[in-house]
Structures are given as structure tokens and as C-alpha cells.
Amino acid sequence: MSTLTPLVDFVRSHPRLLVLTGAGCSTQAGIPDYRDAAGAWKRSAPMRYQIFVADDVARRRYWARSMVGWRTMAHASPTAAHHALTRLEGAGHVRLLVTQNVDGLHDRAGSRAVVDLHGRIDTVCCLSCGQRSARRDLQDALLQRNPSWAGLQALSAPDGDADLEGLDFARFEVPDCPVCGGMLKPDVVFFGENVPRDRVAEVRAALSESDAVLVAGSSLMVYSGFRFVEDAVAQGKPVAAVNMGLTRADALLALKIEHEVGAALDVLATALAPSDLAA
Image (tube, rainbow, N blue to C red):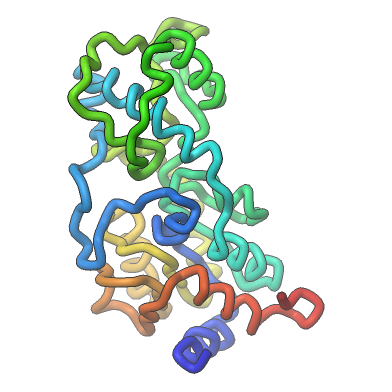
């Protein structure tokens, strides 16, 4: 507890938080993260939007890997980090939780004030008509069209991906939008896309009403999240981070705790919860 006392004191001094979470919150659920402790890619960079829409084989490859990797995402359960943040929200310490993850686990854990900055992998959208549908329905269609792929085993990769290699992806069949026949895409922000402006505006409005920012399980290497740390510092609001390894914001942090994020947040939630909510 002594190593986490500064974190507890930080939140007691800044009780209304904008919380920014990353992949470190979900690794205990079996969802791999993208980067190592030095902030470098552990594998090749994820799909870019421009490639997805322009390259038919790359798009088929994406959906083939996703069909296999979806098993991990579909069965993932909230971790100690997710549950602790729900408790912190219940105790009145979270003005808004902004997650860079697309797994929906904060929602499943019971957090209510959540912005899915990069969207949700459990939803599919049509790039032509905008129709949205459940990813589980597309999974059924993918399995029906590609039965010989259904039994393939592969290591899980971040965000519902899987390490499938050396296959003829040109033969993988991907359904079109059942409404208009358009191209289907996971309802997430790919690299090369911009975060929708309304999400950015909502986060910035919440930041203006917060006392401080708490970063949990993120290296902040992606600018879409890092910019809110820059905004906080520009407004004179302190930023604390709980993360194992380097973050892009290390020089800007008022406090950094190098500790497993779930355990640290559990201690924090327990210390700050009203007596009838303490666990």
C-alpha cells in the first residue's frame, strides 16, 4: 500500500477525474496489447483505413483474422481494473471515463459515463449507408460462408485480431451490407482515420469540469489520447498515470505509478470508497 499512497493522496486532492484508459486495463482479460514497456510495437502496425477500403485482399485478410480472433473478444470478461473504475465512478470520483480500447469491457463492468474514443469492435457499420449491426451477426455470416476456416487455431492479437499467416485470403468470402450492398467495416477508428469531432468535444467539455486526469494502462503513444493530457497540462490540471513502462507523457506527469494497473486501481477504489461500498 505504501507505494500506492501517493496515488490515493492525488485523488483525494483532485476528487473529480477525467480517466483515460488503454490496453493495460484489458490484458488480464486475455486481450493482448500493442506495445512493449518501451512503447515499441510488439507486432506489425494495425490495419490502416486507406488500405482497408482500397485493397480487397487486405480487407479479406482482416475479416479472416477477425473471424478467428473474435472468439477471444466475445468471451472476454471485465478485469480488476474495469471493476475498480466502476467503483470509483460509484463513489463520485469519475467525471468521465475515456477509453482508447474497443472491447466494451468498461460498459460490461458497469461504468456509465464512458466515451469509447476509438469506437466498439462489437459493432459493424456500412461505409455506404451507415447502417450499424451487431458484430456477432456478422460472425455467423462469416462462418456460414467460410466453413473450412472455422476450425483454424491462431494466437490472439490485439482488438479481436489473430495471427493467421500463409493462407489464400483471396478465397475468403466477406458479406456485403444486407441493406444496401455496401462495404462493411468494424465500427472502430482505424489508423489513418480521425476520431469523430463530437467525441473529442465531449471529452474536452468533461475535462473542463474535472480537477485532474488519471491515465490507466496506456502508453499514450497514439495522439488521439495523448492530446487530452496536453490539454490538461495547458489548463494547469495535473496528470497522474498508472502504467508499466514508458509513456509518451512522462515529462508532463505530476505523478507516475509503475504498478500492475488492476491491483493499483483496486487499492485506490477501496481506499476512496464510502464504507458501505468498500470491498
